[in-house]
Length: 108
Image (cartoon, rainbow, N blue to C red; front, side, top):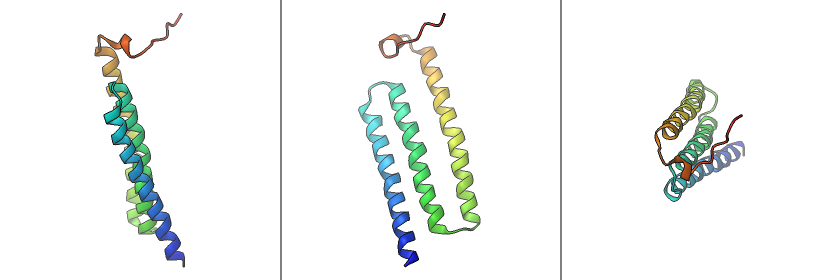
């Protein structure tokens, strides 16, 4: 009985992760501006990766592979937002038509 519960938990997590990846791809193609696309890809990668790797951790049980998967989540959660932030700063500093898409707040 416990194996079936574990199977269904893994199946739901995997399907949820794949759904996040599909929504990410749809968001990348539907949004027109590059910062919106980066936001969709960053959120989709972060949530989709968490759900898929969490499903793999539950499926493998408690062993050394689980620790490796946990380190994979940690590494990806540190590098993905950092690279997205860097790319958004490059876009904001090099796009001459940024005012068409973004309203900047004037600081006093």
